[in-house]
Length: 519
Image (cartoon, rainbow, N blue to C red):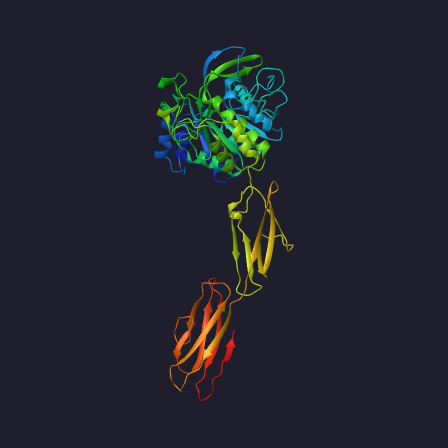
């Protein structure tokens, strides 16, 4: 907490006028020095007035933005304590996904929400972290956490898509998202909204989480959020956030088919859809109900990502996003009025987990194989720029080297095994650095100064040769030249140059072939 005073007289006056009651560093969990400087002022005032006063009456702030206002994305419907069926898990093919993997407790899902009832029968034994000082309402967070990875196959309550995945439970703000990432969460669920406009500092925090290797899933909005279903909602609309909207039991985007006023968000930021209308949930011990909201669509995706990472721990964020998109069930034909605004389609957990299980997370796709100008000047480089920057790579070459670059190589094959501590790939490269070789047939001039001599050369080695003769010719052969000394510089396609010098004799000297120098 920052003291509620300032050495800047103008800022002090603004704080007093607007009854600022709290000043805090909002990204204290960030490791970005710039984000660590971001300060948030809370007041008993109109936020727009405080914003205007700071902008117009002070010079202390580098940039000023209205802070996020966190709100849950929850639309209660009707409640009950028993379910005839769980259409949501059936729709996303959960059982087929569990045939591939039931998840792993080593995969941690981070849930950021209002609060959680960790004594719930579906959360007992699942939670690795929880802030016991949190006194907020627990219904929403409990429902989200249980949907993502509550206890399954325990003869109690309901099944959860994430099955055996572990949970770490955090408060509802961006600093907690950073905390979850640095605490080892492989995916973080954000079933809430923080506003309707872009904030560059929040984007930096999101980028930091992404760069740390944590996949971020967020609710896209509940239709009335930010003034309409077509409008952008944050955090869902930030870069590096996977935004989830809703469908019903027949892949319907309208909760009531034919009623356009019953949809959740559909816009350019939506990445995928999942069950979000009248879905079975639990909000407290022994309390099971149905509810609607993209708050509850998002954790189906979060739990599925947990299964994907259990099947293949090497997946990068980009690969997770690619797999979810590639395996989604296309919704456009069933919802033509929303075509292009429902992302890749409806989540198919089984297809995503199946593809993830065999997905190669390491492939030596880029290499530079430079053939040298002499037999011992070959060079091979494995370019790390195409690899996952969050991992450390090792190299084991057939010649014993452990470097990414081999130089001064003689002709032959070189095999490398590349590992990132999780997966391996092998590639073999051939060095064929033969120097340019040249032979010549010389026809001497028939008389002194007569332009009747010639030098016909044959060149071997790396192709795409160019020629430059001492008399200015750029042809391969010299035809019709008088007696004399002629040098040619031959350059191959790699830029390697070789020079040879020849003498054309006249008939008085005799019909001889004389090669003077080659270098």
